[in-house]
Length: 68
Image 1: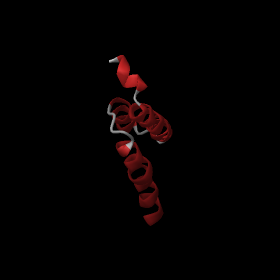
Image 2: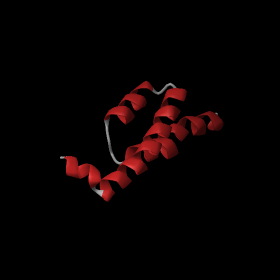
Image 3: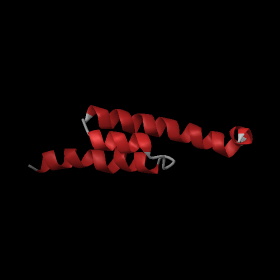
């Protein structure tokens, strides 16, 4: 198991995922999206879900407000 931490791909995935997860969690907390925050915190999708939240789901509220 210790050998996994020496793998460059594993290190690259960690360095890729942490900023995305941090920004998505910050954005979900700021918008008071409690369920998104919990899902983003628990589920690890190598930043795919986090990017979807940042660019699509968190922006839906903004689009709805401008349409009114």
